[in-house]
Amino acid sequence: MNESPVLLRMQSKAATVAEYLASLPADRRAAIEAVRKVVLKNLDKSYQETMQYGMIGYSVPHSVYPAGYHCDPKQPLPFAAIASQKNYMSLYLMSPYCGCVDDPEHKEYAHWFRDAWAKTGKKLDMGKSCIRFTKVDDLALDVIGEAIKKVPAKRFIEGYEAALGDRVKKPAAKAEKTSAKTKATKPVAKKKVAAKAGTPVRKAAGKK
Image (cartoon, rainbow, N blue to C red; front, side):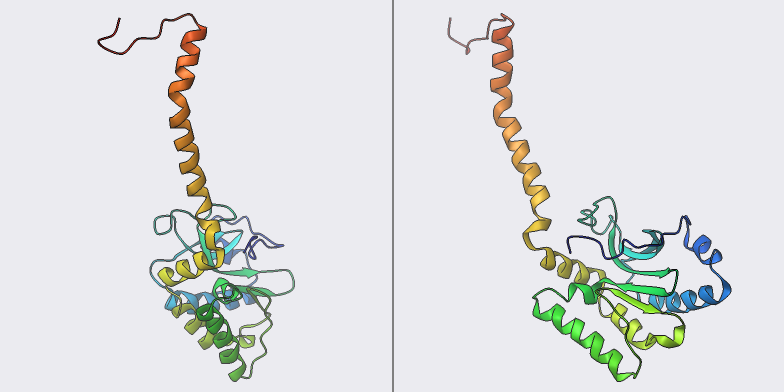
């Protein structure tokens, strides 16, 4: 998870979801809206729907997870996304992607997802997190809905931090270390500046 699997080739400049949908051809808009309906129906209330990375994104807002996305902390933590690409449409699910890490629970989830999809008889055209489709009939919508429902924001954050390990703690630890170092050297620095300027250093009370 060192780089975002949702930094894509085509990124819309639409400022809102409504604007994004309105910009699509009728057939693409109908397909995207059908997938969006399934996502919203099963989405944990702690997630938010916004435009992110030029597509319809579902993420953990900073109000829930202040650290944000480690690749770009200014961005909320991505969970899922829907996009219209040049030759196909895409549904991005970060949960099966997180299942690539060596963690039994998340491996189980990733395997469940692929097995459940296979049982529908539909072909799964999927990379690490991207499910590609050209029409809604390509998708196992029930499996997608269940996949969204299975991962509330709290569980997703836990899996995300488990995948990153110590890397999620380093920025805070570094800031704390820097702060401690600054506090330790600050009095010495002041004394050196005063001595250099010829200003007498005040002696301790009671001494002459």
